Length: 255
Image 1 (cartoon, rainbow, N blue to C red):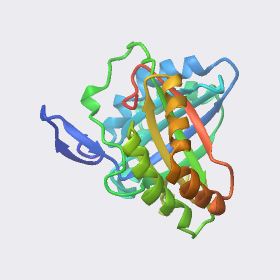
Image 2: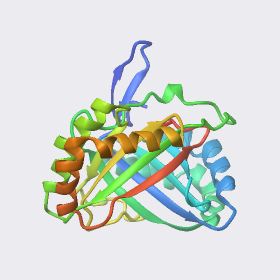
Image 3: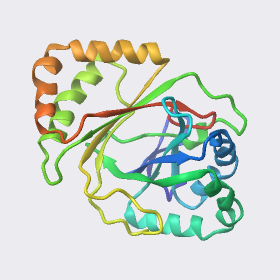
């Protein structure tokens, strides 16, 4: 796992993985085949990807679309990404199981290439804590809110970093990660990523959907957010923010 990111020992000595390059991947699946992909993914594509030098950060069912699968993976840097993807997609595991995975998909090209918005706002996970295959899915609700801004302009992303994030942390629960677009060129063109993007993504976990709604209402009612931060973001954004409501699978590290 040392090839997946920088790491430091936790209280038990387990390495903490903090990837500097993150992919947010959204797959549109053939109707009724999501559970098939989830079962295959959690059984065959977790440890095998990590053995190639990446970390599988989270796997999710989209709560609002029964034919959508969302997942996150991370890398130390772009050089490590190229090496890990080359090894995995050119290796025996993908050769054996990739055709079955691809058969469940209509589209797998909705991919954002991201980096931590600020230090230390990225993911910090311990792969040793991943539940075993067959573990039941937790009941948590993970949200990933995506804001889009003009390319080359940093005002909106700065408002989220310096304005919204401190409020979110103060009100709790603190986000699991806050990310923004990586401008590094995609050096593994076999797997396309979305280009011409300038986004900020905030990922947060809640005990359940009701907790998410209560927290959202509290944030929106906060005077600073209501009167300054959100109007500022509104002025700079290019599209309405999109919130993905996600249900972690049984083996997701992000829960």
